[in-house]
Image (cartoon, rainbow, N blue to C red; front, side, top):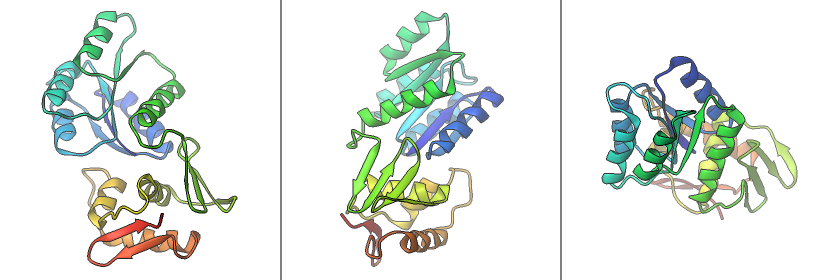
Length: 218
C-alpha cells in the first residue's frame, strides 16, 4: 500500500515513516500543509496520516480541500490529546479516524490496518492467490505452506500484484508504487524485481503482457 505521511515534526515524521515502511508499505512524506495538499491531490494514495498542526496550511484546511475536490482516500488525523474540538472538527471535515498525541506506534499501525481493511476489497490481512499466501500484517509470504524469503521491494511488488490478481500493471505503475515521489524512478529495475520474484514463486505465477506490463495469474 502507498501511504502519505504529513507531519512537520522531524523526529516524529522519521518514526512514522520507519514504522509504516517496516509494515510493508511505500511511504511518501510532506513536512507542511501546502506540499501535503498538493501530493494528496495529484498522486494516488491508499491512505494518509495527517497532522492537524501544520505550517503554511493547517491539516483541517488540507482535508476540507481534498474532500471538496472528491479525493476519497482514508485519512487518519493526529491531534493534541486534550483538544476534543480538533477531533470533532476533523471528523466533520471528512477524517476516517483520529489518534491523540502522544500515542503508541503499535496503535497507529493497528488503526491504519483497520482503515485499509475497511476500504479495501480484502477484508482480511491474509491474501490468497492460488498457492501464494500473503500476510499484510506480518509482511510475510508462503508458497504451498512454505515460508518465502523476500526483500522489502519484492514484498511490496508482490502485494500490489496480489491486490487485484489478473489486472495488468504497467512498469511505471509498479515503479511509482515502489519508490518515493522525489526519488529517481527507473522502470528497468522493475524487470529485475519481476525476475527475482519469478525465481521464488511458482513458474507461471507472473505473466508478461506484451506492451502493457505484468499481472499475477488468478
